Image 1 (cartoon, rainbow, N blue to C red):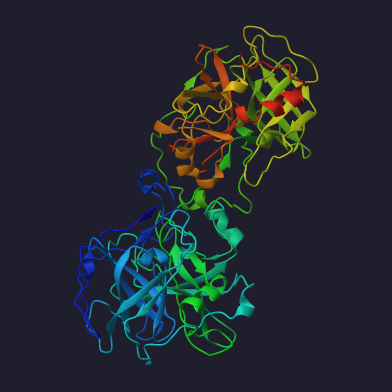
Image 2 (cartoon, rainbow, N blue to C red):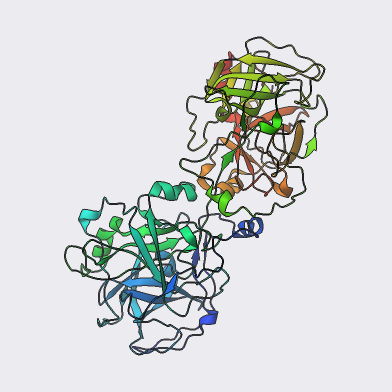
Length: 610
């Protein structure tokens, strides 16, 4: 989703003349990924801790002429609204900027030789654009190919304060520039509390990150045609810097532009998220083709200085639900010592929790799991204690398929050497009448289980000894094959388990709890988790802070079907690491996509609807 902020300003510029602009009315052009819900983030992260709330987001004020290739850009759309961006000088006739800055523009004015855009400085002037060329593959939904070039109505003249930028050479196409110090400059907002662009040019610097490291922040939405700058220390480009240059100073002491500001995270510019830029080495041919081959490329002409920027976007972070500790029997466990088994994307280091530790849940006093279950209310529910080779034991949920087989999540048992399954339990901390356990070393994890992306998160446990059914022990019912195409969206889903009963709890609940919420549509869930969610997953709303939590992994998500009976439609897989009560949907394995796999591996003796 792109947001073009309406700007109450008329940029009527004359040839080589500075037109007075009311900069208080000029707002940045912002760009966000498809379906990104800014209001949702704003509500959930209202009290989020900023890395350094007093820091100027853009870093430092530039000295006049420090970035002679930097230009300001005023783009006006058909409705007469004007947006502000940055850009860079390619030569006397062409400037480079971001596609989202000009894709709906009917006219563009380029500000040259400026330091304070609010003052009629000596030497500062404006040039209208004669031609706007937006990349033909610009994709507003995914923010890909976010590049444009503008041909000026008349050539600019070089001076100490007006110079072209140098682009990378073709021999650098395979370079990532990771670890290099990137510099970004622009007139974007100088703090998260500001509502307008900065009157003076500012700049900051940080290391360029690897694309893998950047993808972890943006849920693997970053591709090879993009480049990212670390947001460490709260240093970052901000709204209004879009289109501006990201440069590095190379071994020859000259600045080379390696990126153009594209987007960032809508949480704010100082929260520490990387900024995302268009990687110019992937677009050298396109730039040359559309600028009459009149640009300066490294190894042809020496040149200059440095800069940086970012905008606003989205991201999502995830964590699976489960627990780790040392354990013996189902009854002799010190549950206060049981810690969650957590699953993260590769290299994820809990950044979101560390930086946003002051997040206020929607209802901090609510029990996350909802209500305490009555004994026997969920006779298909089991507890799963999985022990790995190091002797550490994790806690999960599961459901009974038949007298010999248990269904759970792959991430609960993928490193287990043995499991113990507890039946007929309501209080797992008590030796209740009728409660018993079975052990197993026969574990089948889905052969396509992908721990990095949390896909195919399903596993089966074959019990060493068959169980007997009773009022407290019954098999779950799976959907019929005629329901494979059903989404179950809008139905009330019920989830149960012994997971944490609040975000402040450090251990699982001693008693079985349950909660219910509507099942979401696939597209609604993707608006929270972006491309991490696919069609073989199903999501339960987290409205009112009701949700499964750490330790519920592998447990059943059920609906009351049209025949009035309970049908299990999902298995708890993962949620958001901000907390269980922040209102995020929970993500579950969609069982209609795995009926054949379950039947094949259990011999088919399971209860399926109809």
